[in-house]
View 1 (tube, rainbow, N blue to C red):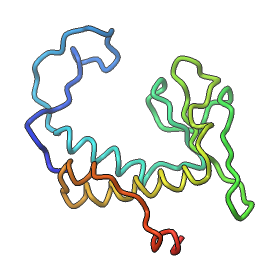
View 2 (view 1 turned 135 degrees about the horizontal axis):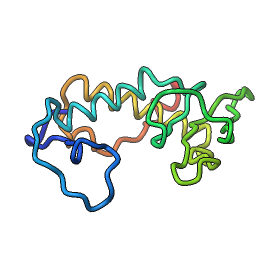
View 3 (view 1 turned 45 degrees about the horizontal axis):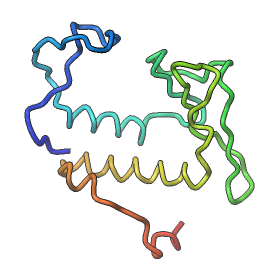
View 4 (view 1 turned 180 degrees about the vertical axis):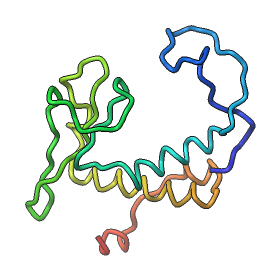
Length: 143
């Protein structure tokens, strides 16, 4: 994503886990918000193992779902089962925030991550990235 300004994300007082309302210190960051967003999209589009990993902002590191997190399994149209997104609620670790995502939702999520990754990789503008996109009937027929 092409940067729209020189805004950068900065840790607050050097600690990413700061109490709400704390004042941010002015520091420069080597990465723009656009670069960080592109890296986030690339990670979930290319690197994240949706079958064996869980998203946990509380733990803030990669790994399998904790045993306390109920796994979300979805049934595909062909009858096969696969892991749905497993997203730990940071305030209630036994709640899976991804449990409401259907097989169609998982397919659309992955399509959109790949689309965003392609746009970010070629330096598309934020405006282009946020344009409303929906699959065409031709796209649906290819699926």
